[in-house]
Image 1 (cartoon, rainbow, N blue to C red):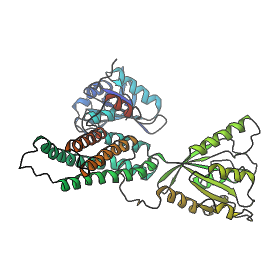
Image 2 (image 1 turned 90 degrees about the horizontal axis):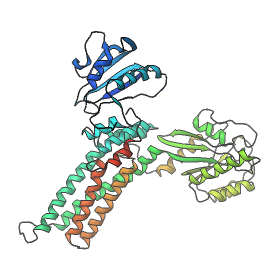
Image 3 (image 1 turned 180 degrees about the horizontal axis):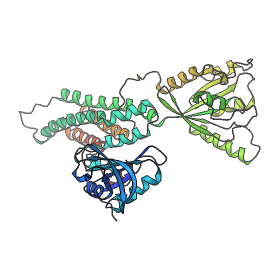
Image 4 (image 1 turned 180 degrees about the vertical axis):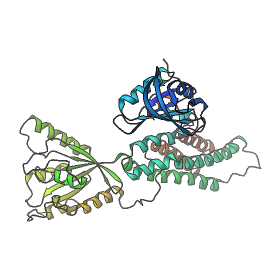
Length: 459
């Protein structure tokens, strides 16, 4: 059956597994009629007779046999998530009860929703714009409070409001310039080149500010790919455990205990750090160790940030020097571990090659906070105020804004160089197209399919 926007859809909207409650969501013109077929309330009322924003106790029933004891919620159009009639069935959270309720709903006139289709309908029905729709996914995937804040800023429309304000300003400027193109001899039209340029540049500066903010917001969304590397037995796994504040990696005095990469996400002052503990770079003794070393080298090549770990109780070895040579072009924090032991390492040979050198004891949990501070300083460069509003971390949005800003800058150059006004008008028109694409005023079906395919089925 071909999927249609007018179909009534249903899906499980909570994670699969054991929980207190699981939700089957229904949306569409027949949502209440379907609920009438499957739900019997304690007071005998049918869902189609119930008021909006009300909840009711009852049972899901198949052939007069109770499938589950539930709470049913009614949200009538247009004041619902999708701007359609929506019914949510709060079942017991086990997969058997949820699946049985969903199967009965599907048999009663619904089709299974596609990934993100509820949010897609919210967009198509005009409740939210495309930027806000994509923010829903950012909120779902947020790994830190800061990333959640960025997603909420976007969902509540802060980015959309700013873009729409700039869009209206560009439309006003375009109407002025096109009037001068169409009626150049009209004496009533006095074109103020300097004032026009100031207004256009104001939009340009706003776009630049959003792009500057988005670089940090994208870090909050995707995290910083960080790799702990060092020769065997310098304390890489101990450091990972210290940063995690619980034991994740096995720690033994035997070199080469870590035989594969281990990845975790750590929240360091609001920044998600995707941290990888690699196998020690050593001469492999067997095929397993060979594969581990290959993966470690690949992880180092792909890393945004390297934490290069040395054993402070030993002098620099050939392996240490080879590692320094391998990563000297990467963004690196050097960590000298085991300061609780007698120190033999030649710090001056390291300090001359790297700016960030920190001494810690992973085992004793000493100076770990200094390492965390150094990571934050490198990521933010000390220039980001955590209270600064960050409007988007979405790569598609950043690309559209970057293209719009580039076109506005070119239009300003055309003005400065006194090129025909047609060049300026064309730049503004193309910039508006990119802003409309971001907001979803202009879109292609394949773009929507790509965006919403990243959602879970029940959202």
